[in-house]
Amino acid sequence: MKIELKEVTAENLRKIAALKVKPGQQDFVAPNALSVAQSKFYPSWVCLAAYAGEEPVGFAMYGIEDEDNSLWIIRMMIDEEFQGKGYGRETLQAVIEYIKSRNFVKEIFLSFVPGNDTAKKLYESFGFKDTGRFEQGEIVYKLEL
Image 1 (cartoon, rainbow, N blue to C red):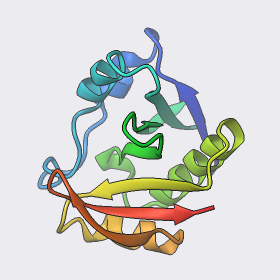
Image 2: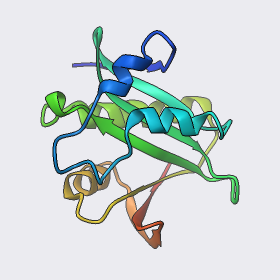
Image 3: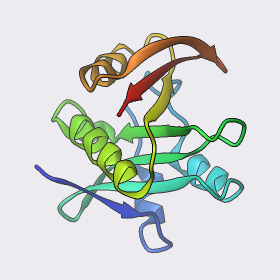
Image 4: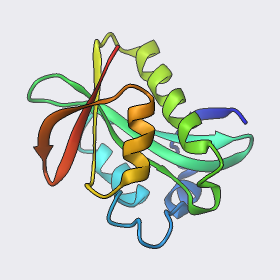
């Protein structure tokens, strides 16, 4: 399986907005429609749809933090139908490579809700480390590039 990242456009917005996580995971990530709306107020935030072939399987958003110019993976989700099949790992890899190819950064930050052990395990498997910071109710991790 190969994940291709595509821009979220007027043509695919409905499909991307319809992607949802499993019941019980709603507190871990904001709905994609909200993320797309938020990106319109922050020019550095980039929304990406994760596709496996012609099928959208997930969503990611990254951007620059205005206060300190750090780069963050702000959101990442895989639709409930595609979880547990390796799409999360492939999407995270694709997002990291996408960021590295378009931005000169030495580190990437992300955060997640405590209790989201699946995300924690995935992030740690890529080398993300706990920063010891806790922001807006979430644990902050950093990947040194």
